[in-house]
Length: 119
Image 1 (cartoon, one colour):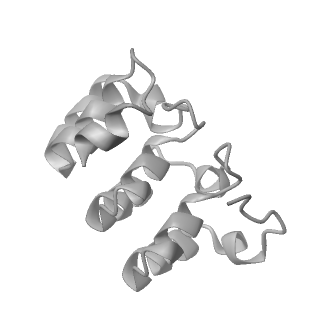
Image 2 (cartoon, helix red, strand yellow):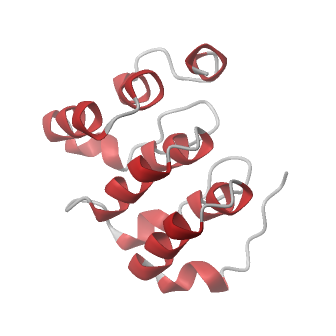
């Protein structure tokens, strides 16, 4: 999976490596502790955040940990990528009910957004 995703990454962005190649909370948390701005940065050529990258990769537990991260602002859960998708769109496509519940618990307005995915 990492090789398919890696072609979509910005060349200088290590948060993608932490998520797509390691895919575990320990590696991702270590990276985010070193660079807290990476949590909210657009890190792919598709305008995705770390949260989007984890969701696109169907790494549900990692998405849940990112949502619970102390520096994750609730409004970031509504962030759209260039496809017009929030993290919740990808979670819904992956049918992860528990992850969807975690997203909506942190930001209930996700269920009332008027923007629709462009895919």
